[in-house]
Amino acid sequence: MSDILTNFVSARKKLLDVFKCKDDFPIKVFLEHRWNITDQEGVIFVNYYIDNVERNSAVVVKKSGSPLIYKYASYTMVIAIDCIKFAYIFKNELKDCE
Image (tube, rainbow, N blue to C red; front, side, top):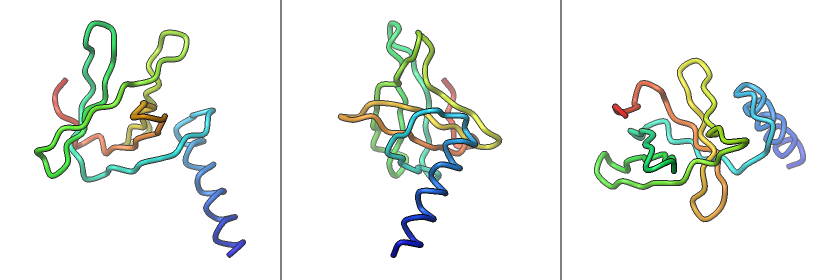
């Protein structure tokens, strides 16, 4: 069990390092969900779709006025609040038009 936990913690740290994210958040991986980013009067939302129908939204966290959106290769990590802060990771190819 300790090997599993050690590997998990190490993999999690490596993932956050890849995105150059300095903080530590619970992570939701939504590689099969369509998604987009919208700005509604200065409040930025990440919207993602369950089964391409049900829309869910979370408020994107800003630090020093900049939204915490990290891109790496074919993926984007968005730090957003849905009751608590999460790091959402999406596939770029499934991003809808903004």
